[in-house]
Amino acid sequence: EVQLVESGGGLVQPGGSLRLSCAASGFTFDDYTIGWFRQAPGKEREGVSCIYSSAGSTSYSESAKGRFTISRNNAKNTVYLQMNKLNPEDTAVYYCAASRASMGSLLWWEYDYWGQGTQVTVSS
Image 1 (cartoon, one colour):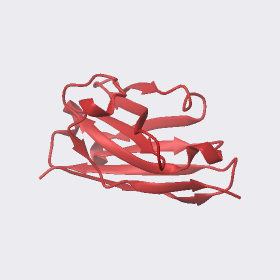
Image 2 (cartoon, helix red, strand yellow):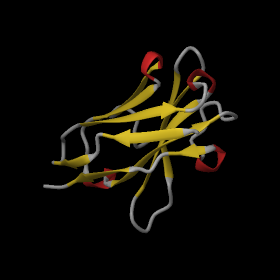
Image 3 (cartoon, rainbow, N blue to C red):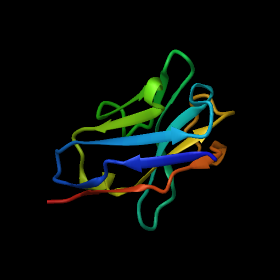
Image 4 (cartoon, rainbow, N blue to C red):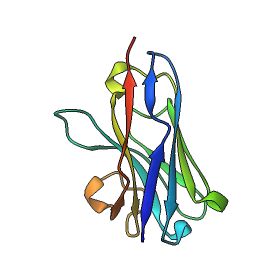
């Protein structure tokens, strides 16, 4: 059974940092692109970042570039999203997802498996 479990969300003040984790099981981790997506109330789901290929190539949305860093630990089947300089516009439910076919895509419909999400709230 494929499982993706996110953790690390919470309440943080503007300018603060959070690190999200996505623990994967039930599939060959190295064969998949793992992406982070987010969805705020009333808004569409948007891609934030993904990591893919044996070289650990990465992609970022414009809003994430320079502030967020994605990484993975293959030994632990875990992907991380380090988020710095957070602002209220980053408030959303953050999901990790896995795709066999996608190589660097941040299009949510190209992903096959999804976690349950973790809430990130940026507020003073």
